[in-house]
Image 1 (cartoon, rainbow, N blue to C red):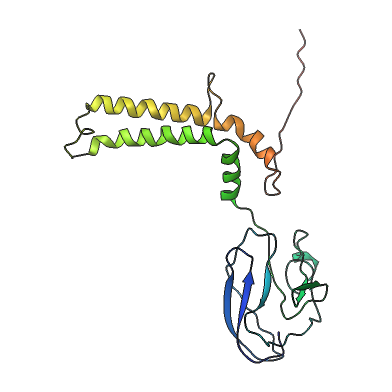
Image 2 (tube, rainbow, N blue to C red):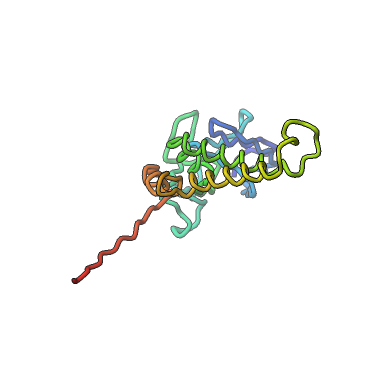
Length: 207
């Protein structure tokens, strides 16, 4: 809610990929802008009007957590909301009552794990690509070097590389695979989205 009437542009600025939303406002009338579909990995986001001279007013029911002026049930301890006036932060909030939530990104988690063990993942992917490459030789109709391969040799190479792929993926008595290292890698992330609980037990043998 603002004290100006007109069509103005709201900016969600995360410093990475800002989003602009144009909307018509009437002074003193509350407006709900929903389905924004804005996600960011940035630690903070500024919300402001693109146009100069928009009159904003302090909110009578501001919140420091999560969503709007609702009760404690929808608040999130991971979010902090502050007012912004002339680029400075204040406890008083102006014009906007943002509603946000924290979500986990599997892409980000996987990238972090791969960055810890790039060679293991690279070799595993290489074997998978080679297995697929040789398995698709059977359907080629082109008169080239690949087409001249013996059919049995194609299948043999495809089987060889798919076995190497699964060995790097699942591990074996000779090779430590991705699955063997996943628990340690997840523990090293120190990410709130990942909770590793290793169940252990104790047994006694009487002889």
